[in-house]
Image 1 (cartoon, helix red, strand yellow):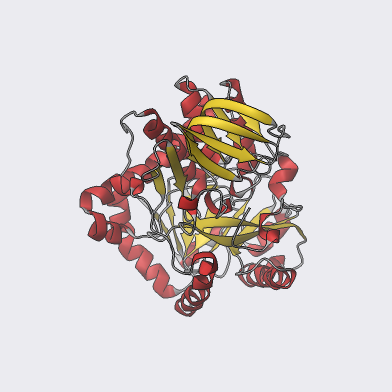
Image 2 (tube, helix red, strand yellow; image 1 turned 120 degrees about the horizontal axis):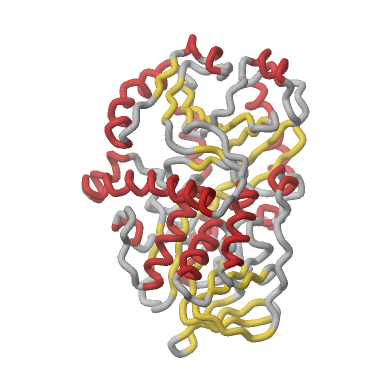
Length: 440
């Protein structure tokens, strides 16, 4: 497989808290020659949501994964089920695609959160839900002023009233730290992504979907009116194929995929359970999922068992030296924002890949000029909700059904390639540098 980061970026994480709570299942490796109606490459939340919808419609479906389903971003993310999925602001979406498309996008954001909510309740998935919406915390006084100024627009867009929290109110809300106020949008919730994935896997298997692990797709080639997927020890011939590998894609799996996605590292640490007295000393007792207003944002939350999760963007390389530097950096940022927890032990640390698109919007649709080939990817760090939702929406496209849920037309526009090809991650260095300056 040909990927653009060093091999370490694709290894199974050895110190991921989610894996301790819900170890991934051990699915058999694909061996021999198989036939299926629809093959899905990638067993994360996008692939599983597509499989669930397809199987419910009676389509014979098979899922394969390069490692084990859930080993990639779906089992490494911060567990924020919230609005998002694009890096474009609503205003830019309106200028680029029209006001009606902006309105449809905001409906899709909300529908994505509701989609996961329904999956959890309808399939009795206990994923340790908590947090009443999401809270954005201002890292500067100016950021707070900007948040207050846009709160009325936010209310009009989403039909809910944002809760504005002044700086002097943060501690009494259990949000004590080096912040200048915040705004809570009462949409979304936090969860344990591994438990969500495990429950969804169970529901999909009950629909008769076959799973294979340790079966990377080495190539996808047309054969008559069908497609043949070659893996190390077997093949699958399928009428239709869904590419759901997102930031963990391989450049040579399908020539169409080459350079159409840009993986970006994101890193997370998790502490031991923090006692009530330690929480009180810092002034942080809330179970709200939060992120700050930086361009290079931090995201964090206290979990139900008292552990604290803290995440930030990762490094530009996945070498031992780069990972050591990032480990020091994430601890320094954590201790700066939460100085009273400087001596709290960090028990888990891992990284994963977020997927960016050149358009800065997700893609879910038909691969041009390749009948029977489909793809969904590019959630810009908000894949729990949007990745799940677009997996289900892509299933409608595969089945030829009309989209009866919010789905702006631009999501089906095929993405352009990034410049620099296999060296495209070099584009991140100046972007990160500029963002760091703007965050001052």
